[in-house]
Image (cartoon, helix red, strand yellow):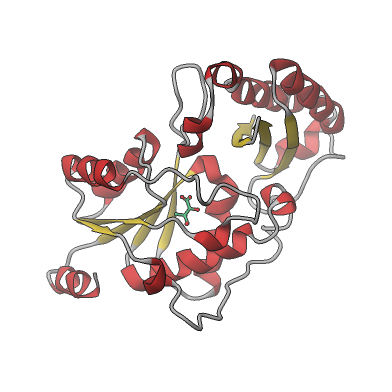
Amino acid sequence: MRARVAAWREAGESIAVVPTMGALHAGHLALVEAAMRDCDRTIVTIFVNPTQFGENEDLDAYPRTEDGDLAKLAELGADLAFIPALSEMYPHGFSTQVTVSGLTEGLCGHGRPAHFSGVATVVSKLFIQAQADRAYFGEKDYQQCLVVRRMARDLDIPTEVVAVPTVREADGLALSSRNAYLDAVQRAAAPALYRVLGEVAKRVAGGAAVAEVVDWGVAELEAAGFDKVDYIDVCDAATLEPLAEARAEAVTDRPARAFAAALLGTTRLIDNVAVG
Ligand code: PAF
């Protein structure tokens, strides 16, 4: 990859990288398309990163569809697929971790304490390996977008992080590789996450107290069939500070977002929408 990137740079071409864990769906392909529109060359990385999975999470079950992924990338015309082996990314003796504080403490960081350190570590490696001008991430993982942007700035990695709007099914469900785990009943319940978040955002923007709206949202998700709601929260869109005690005025002063993570069986779905 370094040799290819060096040749592209020599020719004056701009370079994009799209980090993924494979099992590519239309949401990933939208990232690749955005990258290809903006840059001369597009690299897609596929690596199921074990360090971002918790002990009881779905690392072993995570869908691996490499042949299909490569066919989709070839059809789109991406320039390079980088699929490193585990031993290439984490050779024997690997001892370094990248940890971003602040942004990683709330929302998904609360229930998945090691997750963002795993993400920041692997993404910093991928950025250094690819040496791209721009990197593309989906806004469904909004907290991840902010974390990798902070990491790149703090480590002086000159790769600009671009967040691409979430791609959704017709019924509103955000595309995710984990949707494949849902059975028919769970799949029917899943769009409630986006519907409830939209309503939470609307009520908060309309002046309702955040804490009351969050309680309403949790009850609504449970009534829709979700087995557990990890969180619903309304946060500052830049710092992710919770605005739970704030009234609408404070919320609408600065851009805010409503976030949720909830489980259908053992499948954990996340989503987020802008407030106002
Ligand atoms: O969003 C993902 O698929 C992963 O967290 C990423 C960014 C590829 C890092 O492993």
